Image 1 (cartoon, protein in one colour):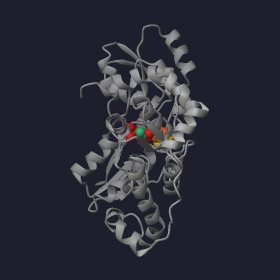
Image 2: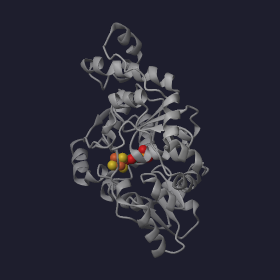
Image 3: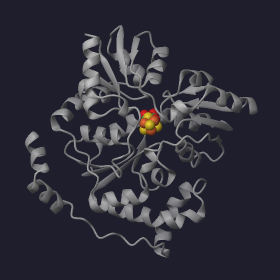
Image 4: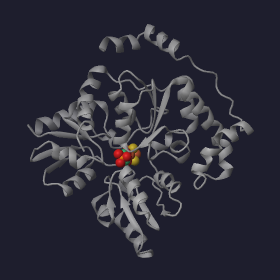
Length: 357
Ligand code: 13P
Ligand code: SF4
């Protein structure tokens, strides 16, 4: 394995790779009648949220990306926070962090294009070391992943000997390599309880850790990280929405501060929030999370009215159709992880993925 990675990194490896994946001619991006016809069914999926005037700009990229996926034997994974033209029109697999990790492990394509942030692409590479994993913009980071290093985890381990450490998937491969197991917001309580320990360190999100602590008897030791998107919501703003319309349903992501979660009718991962809306179909709902997700759900639940306090994740929004097209044309930007780190990180991610639900 180390040898294969070393060869890949060498001049011979790069040549072998470019023989396997030669750069393709850049597609023509005119909005022709052929493009309009080929993408008509896709526009139907997003017509509630994408104005007709924008479609001639999106449609040529969407057609080119979908054509090139077949040429490259590629699969596009998109997180629930991607914009609707990506989420509904070019993605093969959509979901929360856990679903994307599980699907990456199952994908039989040669190439994975990860439309999400860097830690998500790294998770795919950790689970699929032999696939080419591309991220359309490698600057798509995450305030949580940036809040802690592998060295920090080693220090925590020294300070709390014998206490198991759980890392949220919103961490780098270096951090995943140092911990006992990973979790996502959809399985965090289950992961913590699976360890059978009276005390567990949960990093790096202090709010997720607080929420988990409220759901379990296990004592939780946390780190000081926070999501720059979810920490901006306040209980006061949500109470103002409720005062304006007491029938409104408020559902929140567990990365929100505790006083925000206290106002919510339901708390769960992005996938659980989507399922909640699709099952309950309330007349009016406020999703306390990144705001593209409301567009993605709105396009499938036209009878639900969404109140949108728009907090965007600037990292997720770096992923755009032209960059996805560039990924497939030029096979960039490829995610690489030191094989020794990846092998240790894989243990933590696989231990989570293999937990029985
Ligand atoms: P989910 O796992 O709930 O999709 O959350 C990922 C994330 O980054 C939320 O901000
Ligand atoms: Fe990270 Fe927050 Fe953006 Fe999710 S929404 S990727 S946690 S910064």
